[in-house]
Image (cartoon, rainbow, N blue to C red; front, side, top):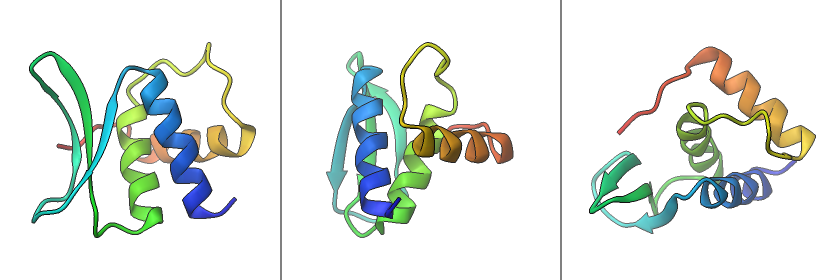
Length: 90
């Protein structure tokens, strides 16, 4: 699966978990936070699709993904990634 499509699947999944995904410009790496009781994932506009997918996977690694249908290729990416990091960065 191409990185753009993978990133889109992960963005949709994050939204299903109640995150608002924003793409912003600035001098930051990106990550997740809670602001005014709203769960956010902030992605840097300068990130490649691969970097966006990786960041989204880091955030989603902390969610319970067992009861949610995820395209098998996307689930494999998440499982591979969460096995190596398993933490959320901010």
